[in-house]
Amino acid sequence: MATEGIEAVFLTTHNWGKAAKFFQTLGFELEFATDHSSGQLRKGDGPFVFIAEVPEDQETDTRIVLNVADEKPFGADSGVEVVTPFEDTHYGTREMTVRDPDGRLWSLQAPPAKS
Image 1 (cartoon, rainbow, N blue to C red):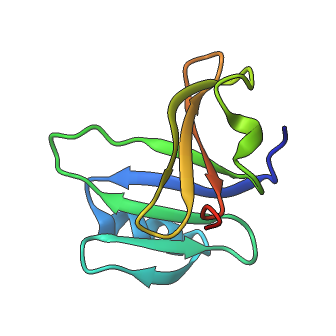
Image 2: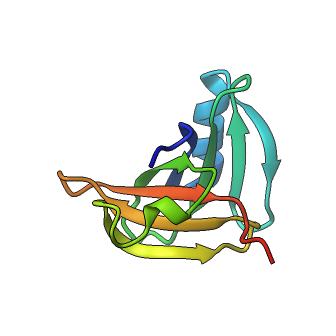
C-alpha cells in the first residue's frame, strides 16, 4: 500500500480573488477559474493548488491530496482510519478521506473505476 505522492493542495477561502492573487504573487500560474469562485493554480510541474470560496459562516480549511494508482489496497482492513470510503467525484476521479494519528484529514485520489 503506497501513494504516488502529493497530487494537490485543496484550500477553502472566504475570498477567491484575494487567495488567487496571493498565490500568483508567489509565482503560481492560474490554470483555470470557474464561474463559481474557485480555480486551480500551479507552479511548474509540481502539485496544483485548488482554491474554492466558501461562505463567511463556514470555517476555511486545507487538505492535502495524495495520488494513488489503485484504490483497492486502501480498504477498511488497510490499517488506515477511513473517514469516507472512495466515492466518484464530479471531476472524474475517485476520492476517499482518511485521518492520520494526530487527527488531520487527508484525501486519497484514485483514477475512475474501470467498468
